[in-house]
Amino acid sequence: MIATVVVFWQVDLRQHADEAFLSTARPIAAGKPITDSDLTVVRVANTSGLALIAASSRSQVVGRTAAAPIPQGVLLTAAQVGPAAWPPSGQAVIALAVKPGRAPAELTAGATVVVLVVPSNAGQNTASGNGAAKNTDGTRRAVATVVSVSTGADQVGTRLVTLLLAADSAETIASASGDASLVQIGAPR
Image 1 (cartoon, helix red, strand yellow):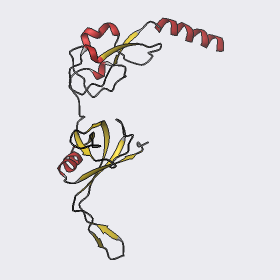
Image 2: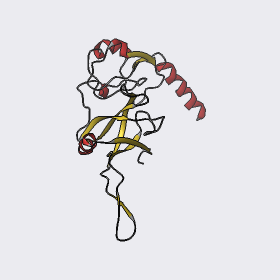
Image 3: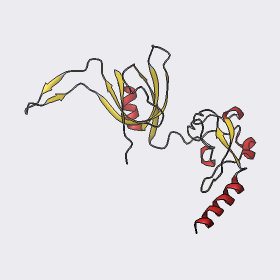
Image 4: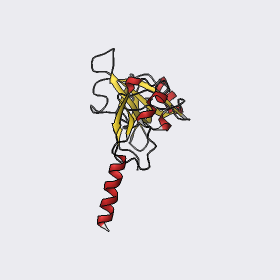
């Protein structure tokens, strides 16, 4: 039985060894036209269950738009090419300038974060009847997914973080004044 599996595996590898598919040579933003220099060709031995775009279809992909952000090094599928479907319905994309020390140093695209925007006049606490401190500083909070992280142009050490989050939360965070902090959390299971 093991010999049969090994023989089948070897035959399958040889059959698919010469198949070439398109991959991204650099990140492509949602809604942006795909250029020839955005693409590279890779060989994939086993494409079972994947709807990859063959390298021979390169000319049909160039000039079309990315349906969603596509990171560098991703094998292209038909679902990633076409009319922009980004951001998804009910969600929005915003950008926040994050000062040094206000986000994890190794923050990358795909991370789940809690966004906290604390007004500059925050810090006023009032005591409640049971002795616990109640924070009345107007801090805004939302959970988001990091889309991209880049170096900010205005201040040394500032990073521009693009986030995907619920549309109503995006409006609240984008309209809040104050310093933004990002707390990276584990992805929900």
